[in-house]
Length: 398
Length: 61
Image (tube, rainbow over all chains, first blue to last red; front, top):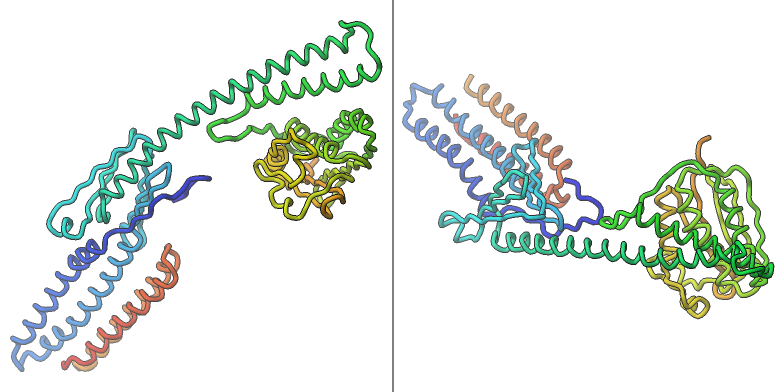
């Protein structure tokens, strides 16, 4: 039985030992009866019937051996039978013979569970049969379950939780759409304003303001694109973003983003130096890698570097295209390194430099890089020594 | 003559025990059975077979 990612196993139940005893008795009793008959028959034979006496004598240990082998098979079947309850499904693995097994599966959503405890033996040892029925699936019975009421309660409680979870997911999806719509509205208004400045609707502006307005217009457009991408591609139920992989030139994307940030770097009086090797073609989602990885690295370097230089490098190393951004900024303490790529993972003093940081940028970058078959990491000599961020992707076969 | 048949039957029991011993060992190794439980089960099976064979040898023909 295979569980899907994030599926949690809530309960693993093996059959009650009393059911093993009953099965063993069922197998051993006929065998023991045959052995007794053989021994009685043997005792009644006369000295003249020596051959028949000997054959009956020899059959007794053979019958014992066969009973012993069958008991071992019964134990194997008992040991391997198991009921597994996860947060989404119920599995029942039933060993039908020494080598044959059957695995039944029911969805937890809308499941109905019945309990049947029949006979004195089952009441005495508190075990019974669970009857499981799920919408659109065949009902099944699971015998020999210890404390069946408790197991039934766990399953039904999980069904309730599953319903609540679905309701929460639906509300989250609605909230995400609402928020995205609202943000998109504000971004669109900003975009219109900046477009007005760029197109001269407010009269002539200085060269610096014109450059900044172009940059802001680009940013607003990227923001709108990102929101649209979330609205169109997200699978909110799974919390995943869909990727559109195709070969693209990482070198060109890096150059484009370097040019995009050049003005900001100049305003902050930072030197932005790039060394980009040509033809680093990789297979991946260009828009997401550009927006969430390249842009994020550069944006962070600019935010966390008060003075000095930022170096952007794209190079081919051992069949991989490596993109890296190094800076002379605040650096990363060794204790912060572990939480760098985690959800909401902030450095100890990062909020002092960038109060608006959500701590999700590098986490999202890591998801995007890994989903595109790459890896992401960072290096720093410690606080005040700057840092270097790397993202590496397999080169596409051209 | 009877003694010969006795030895043949004993050999048959021994072969049967060994064959099933291998079958169980192989199956229990492949199935999701804990290693400690598997060793205990194999020892128990072997002890049972040895006792039955000893019982077979002790029976007067």
